[in-house]
Image 1 (cartoon, rainbow, N blue to C red):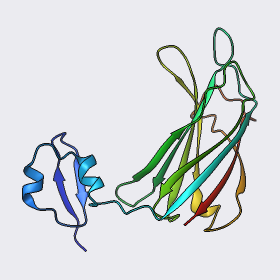
Image 2: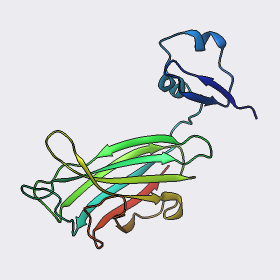
Image 3: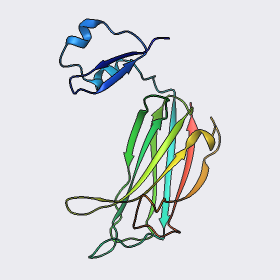
Length: 180
């Protein structure tokens, strides 16, 4: 097992378990993203994580004018020991002036496996110019679901320490499933 480190043109440290041809590193158009896609660190998706966003309840109103216009982003990451690998990101629709938004939306993200899979759920308030982060929660997917299992209902309190506008009883309701 070898781990190679090198600097990219953006001066970011990059690790690789397989040696890359030196010529490849000298070609300027190869960024870390292209090297990642070429298979240095990543593995090909073998399954699909399905996320059903049902609703959010009891949002606190963070807007000066009107009410909060919430939307949700889901970022799926493989939590590796050295470098986390982002598997995908999806975003819900925005719900105008709604403190108890109902979404009923389904998203799919191709993933390599359930091992060390973390779903980062972020709730934002859509504003003109800059969107405010209202709250977030991390879900360790491999602790909750297994391959081929029926969708699991998840009810999570949004972390009010990270999102200052959430009331203590603000909750997000999801269903998760994984298929290969």
